[in-house]
Length: 77
Image 1: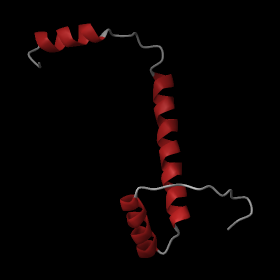
Image 2: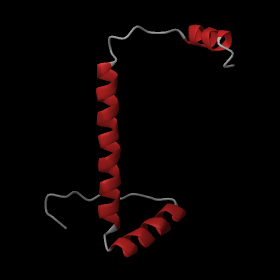
Image 3: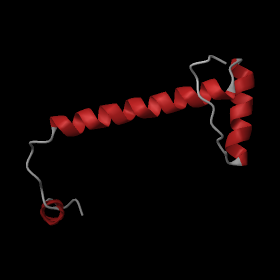
Image 4: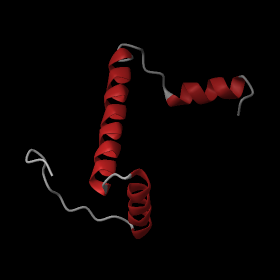
């Protein structure tokens, strides 16, 4: 383990833990490496979502009721 890494205790659902053990064995990687990769991917998704929110920040708000009325008028609901 690198000295710059931090240790944490994580409790997994038994089925998830079993799947992680199998995936780690099949890919010759550690459970820690798999979890770190998954967390990094999730954070990357969050960064993408925040960028999309920023891009759309100046769009007008559309009331939910208006959306429902429009869908009904167009026969979608």
